[in-house]
Length: 188
Image 1 (cartoon, rainbow, N blue to C red):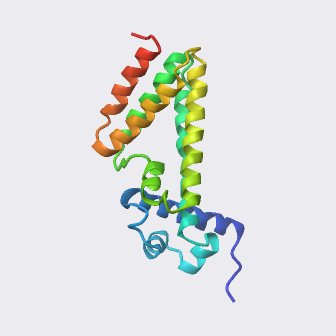
Image 2: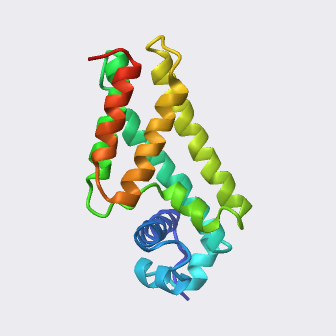
Image 3: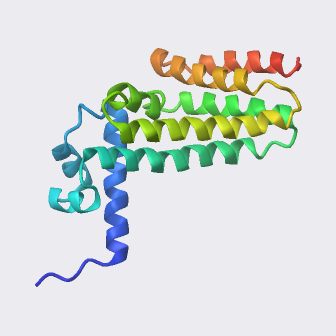
């Protein structure tokens, strides 16, 4: 009789599964990746995968939730190092420029998921909307600290830069959006 699976092994296997699925979905697209490929990449049998997640949609939502925590956490850690409120807002675009220049950058995982599954999956659509709301709210807090009523344009410039960089494969949209935001903030 095999030894029972420990909580530590469950955590480790779940993380390996989420790592493999996230990498494959981001690199190739959600619909292009079958569960057999996720199984191979994670090293877990399908039966074990389906114990963690009832179906692919549940796995996609879990990948997006976990990515949101890491992505926004990294962004916050970068931006909140900056003391001056206006410079803090500009630091958002510096972080975006670094992200856009990373090898394998394929745009926004949530926009990509929405494009593939948003119309057909309420769960994915809800997760995409949750991420976009949280990002908006996070940026709005930083912008409000400047005392200027420009949160909506700043969020739109950030979102536009993300989409444009994802399509063009060029990190320059972050620099262009940063310059526009500096103007909104009354900075030289």
